[in-house]
Length: 115
Length: 387
Image: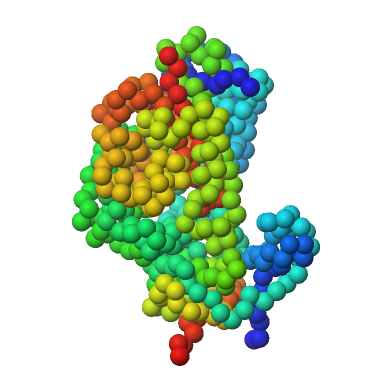
């Protein structure tokens, strides 16, 4: 699947937000356009979660906050058991968990091979 | 605006309260608070009940009307107030507003939650539903995970170590041991805490609060009337509340609790006081990292230095600024809707000099910080003894 992680750019002031807000957090503008957040982000903090929420079977689950630059960040699952502060990641589409009787899909973040 | 005083307060024991349902414990705390206020059968104008999960856990809604019914407070106005784990302080704030505005002359505020009859994973999930539905919740976030990520930022940026979290837990357990209302009355050691189960690396079981049942209540009236009922009324000198963006990743700086900063600033401005004027503090240590971060963002310590204050014993019961003499959420327990009210009950006891073995000597002014969501809605009260 060729999906891209998208943010929302305020057409009045240019601020990029993720997730979407109906009014811009900076200027209160209400007109937003979708923008791709890109392929490169950096891990700024993380945890390995041992007490798992419903629909995720194998501990630990690595979760983290990634930074795309320009004040734009996202939260999600980090697809490695060896997370490191500052490591380079990229968004990939995949199954996140089961919730009720549904499989939930979304973006997670996987390490980019260095070199 | 009129000045508002707290003239009565009470709480149930916190813990696993077998054989009592949510309404039973709300009734118990309310009746004791009314008795403590010495208002006899005087008519109440309004009742506010702080609660987060009655609909989900007790399968009961409109619980403020139900409380009025159980204890015959008709025809008092009655509202349930929900603001996540800050529901209790939000309820107190609503009571304050009712008196200050002149709309009411006698108000009961109760907060309660009955949580231990549900499985831990049900509670963890219900609490996680406070997070952003698509940007946080569906990815598997839990509140311990958010606290763990904040802890790691603090370790990286400010040199906090796991030992500091253990020190806060040891202090709060020691205080809880002196509080007959506390859920957990057991001393722990640094080594014991650091050897406990990993919940969300680097967070261990002993750096997180337990799941508890409990209720607390206060009675409010205009400060000018307070001495009619009570020898030692306590004035609500400052109230501050502020919100921040819901997703933690979207905050200006995920290591800053901006809602705490803004709520504290508002409360201090209203009270015309500064952090150095405060003698005793109750903070929202659902996770021990939060006591450290809130102690900074309330203005008591410089950013990044809160853990040094813990190390130096400043926040201990016999320190310069005792934090969580009650044992905090860690030891007193955290029945979410009750917590904000219980913090204020503890501080009223402290200001009246009725806190027994955990009394902070000569305490005249106090601050309570109740933290909703993961810090996207904070309510702070500043209290002052009326002499």
